Image (tube, rainbow, N blue to C red; front, top):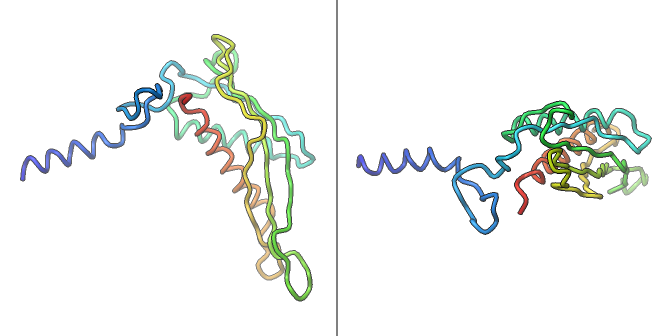
Length: 173
């Protein structure tokens, strides 16, 4: 009985520490799945190449919050950081997903946000990660009576982009 309790206590203590190793040849390992040599990251405000203003600030803020809550890295100024994450919002696209049968009015719409980013090691100049077309889509119902707002769907897409981008910053596989 006591052995079982000790085993359970050890498992619950060590389980959160297990993750994929940063070296893909090692498989699962105890420790962080993030590169231990990186301690700080700079995230300047992303550029906005769309006509929708203000989304770049919301996106950058969401990315910084994800880094602060999900990684061991600290946010720093570009001149003091080990790495720098730069990027741009490249596309804001609305698409009709469904229409009301009787009237033909838009019933459900999707908003897709696309970004490009580059994560550079300031110490060596190496590109740690980069993607040219990284996107997220969220849906909303603008139909009268329900009246979901476009801004709500944009926020959901931004949050999804931020979560997915920080996942990409994990140790290189």
